[in-house]
Structures are given as structure tokens and as C-alpha cells.
Image (tube, rainbow, N blue to C red; front, side):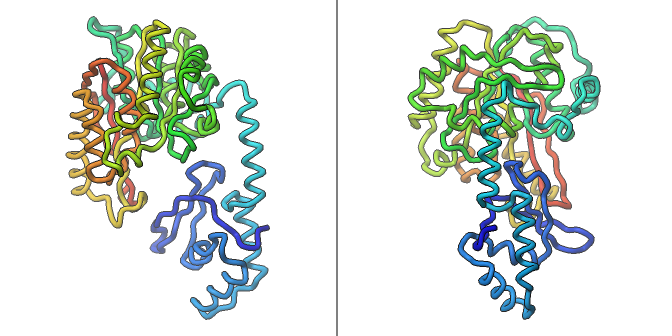
Length: 409
């Protein structure tokens, strides 16, 4: 046990429980599987676990703040519990992390990490679950046969869990079913956790309860060879990230669980340095180099490509760091701004969409902007049709997320 305990990078947000103000502490990377809830005394103690304060320092701070002596045995027990639950940056956690990384790299495929939580884990139950999302009034109706018209070249789909965003997934993948023809899906997913590089590749197939979504390894190898940096260095980021996994599940459902298509899974990290600099993303050598490499491999490996962005929109409210909200009124404002953003996306204006987010320094926290930008840049003259816009809100917990489905032709 560390003498100067240090919490890992965690999410903390206030909640109300039976009239008491608590702090919920959760691990966004999912290593600590269950959140913990802190009263004001525990929150005070954990706030001092920054790697600089010894247990004696923390004990003394608590005495000065409350006038009560916290027995050292009790404080040691708390630290041990935090360490056991993987909330501390400790040798215990680092050993656990190294083991997980090696297990993931050694695994022949990427496991269906969120089966049984975000969606049903058993195949028949999952089929029924997804079928329910097509039902009106929120869904697009029953799946229909292909319609004449242009092939779908791009798709923007949510990555919120199915329970909240299911009908929007249904609208997105109904568009794919109505405009078939693709057999390769380049999926740009949102990376919700920090990566050392801006993009992360993997050669692994994606397991789903409906069978594996096979990765086009030849495409990924050629893409890697065309790039100056090693984009497998962050491959472990794929292990728990849901934004590509959810698209793989819906692709398997759309294609009737056949093995007739391949995916190219690419995680996209933060563009906040671009937002803050005020420069266009097209002027960023790494972003433009990656776009050029993707387009070059698409040209060298002829196939019928559809580019997918697994992308949510705004994240607002106390849960996400706002001082208040959300409220019905604030969500109307968010919708207005979201729709302005989506108009730029539908017009194929990747730089304009990015500028609109940068204009207020991403105040709405649009986590899906980087994959949407990448998808638009990898399609010639993209033009989109908005299929559905939705908001999910929990006013009691102070959180709201917005998302949309869009077809790009």
C-alpha cells in the first residue's frame, strides 16, 4: 500500500440520494468496474489523495477540518479498499494493467466487451432487442427491401448505449439496408480515453453475439505501412471502447449475420489542440496525413466502401462539468446549436463543422466531432440527409446527451 496514495484519473460528479448530496466516483476506462459514492467526509479524504500527501498529512488535514481524530487504522483500511478496487495509481494497479494489456494483445479477437450491459448478450434476445428499435413512432418501421437510388457512401450513427439510442441506430442502419452495395466499412470511432497518438489501429476481428465482424487485415496493414507513425501503439484502447463495437453489432444484424463484409476499425482521439489553436484541421499534418493514407488505400484496394462515424453529439449538465442543468430550456438551446452543426455536416463542410465546435471551445463537448470530420474528409463531395435527431436527459442526475443518425450519399 502506498504511503502517499494517489487516485487514478477518474470522473467525479455530484448526485442526490435520499436528500443527501453525494459525489459519484467512476472510472471512465472501466478498470474499476463499479462506481463508488462518497459523502462529504469521504470526498474530503479522497480529494487529498494526490500522491503528495502522506497518510499522516491526510489524517492531520481531516482533524483540522472537522475537529475529529480519524484513526490511522481506519484510514489505512480505506486506502486498501480503494487499491483493491483499482481506484489508486499504485503498483497493484500497474501490475493489473500490464496483465490486461498482454492478454488483449495475445487474444485472437476483440471480445464483445459490452454484451450483457449495453445490449443483450444472447443472440436471439439481441435480435428481438434490435427489432424493437425499428418500431414506430421513434423507429423507422420494419426493415424494408433495397430501394433504387445512390449507394450509401457514409453513415453517422450514435454510440450511446442501445437502451437510450436504439431508434436512432435503427434509422441509420435502415438507410444502409435500403441502399446496399458496400462490402467494406471504414469505422471511425470516438476514443473516450486519452491515447498517446491521435489514431489507433487494430487487426483484430470484433466479436458480437451474432458472430464476428471480420477486420480487413490487408487494408489495415497497407494503411499502417503508408503512415509515418506506429498507430498500433494505442491498440489497447480498442479493448473497452464501445463506439466501434456498437456499429459492429448493428452491421451483423443488418447483413443477417453473414460473413459478406469487412470492417476497418479506427479509433480517433481528441482534436482539442486543434480547437484551441484556431487552425483548420486540414492544416494539421497528422490529421491530413491520415486522411490521405486512408484515401490512398481505398484507391489501391478497390471495393465498395461506406465510411461510418460512431459519434454522439453534446454532453451537457452537472455530470459533465457544467455548473447547473440540464433544463428543458437549456436543451432547446443545445438542439438549436446541434442542428446548426448538423447542417454543416450534411453540406459536407468538414472544416465548417469543426470551426463551429471550436468557436465556443467545444462548450457542448461534442465527442463525435473528430470521427465525423474524418468520415467527411474520406468521402468525395459528401452530402448528407439527417434521418433523426434525439436527446436523452436525466434531470435528476444532471446529465444529457444528444445524438443523430445521418445518411451520406
